[in-house]
Image (cartoon, rainbow, N blue to C red; front, side):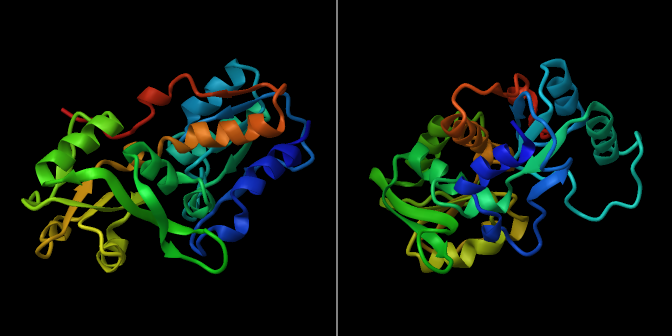
Length: 260
């Protein structure tokens, strides 16, 4: 098996052509011709994830967030990105990221959020070109709820200890928009979709001053996207059912945000 074979399986699901212009999805460390004996799938490519890959005999790592995202001027052990790059190169570990390509593909991050909530009549929130690709999803809850009921429902479905929300709506509603990751820039799109509730992450303080009949919930960046790890692993196993592919055993502790 070669790196390019694993890449092909991933990109059949999440083509690089879908990624945003500012993104850095794709093969970030290694050569397409490198031999691969095992693949480890995680969320963020950290030095700890590379260590886990080496310990488990995996010479390729696939993550959602890119290891190299913004420009880097140094590669040394004092920087988290530099340390991970050094460990990957020294350990002969190829690194691939499916970021906004997996956000925008049908069946990707936001579709997983919609499925977790049991939304019906699901559509793409911000469609792009032909087909079903684009950012976010919008659909209808299994039953109408008021804002406080929706808070409890979302916490239950995502297994959350808490979330941030604007003032809960008193009236019942069913239409909900979701977008995995940082969704503050798409609030206007959620409003235009007719959604009464928009669920995403990384909202700024001022975003919580919402118009009448509309509320937002910030469930956390990691929490909104982490299901993509299982989706990427399933795509690899679908193509190569007998190949050594596995999910990070430390995924539950991989969220860099701590709640107290």
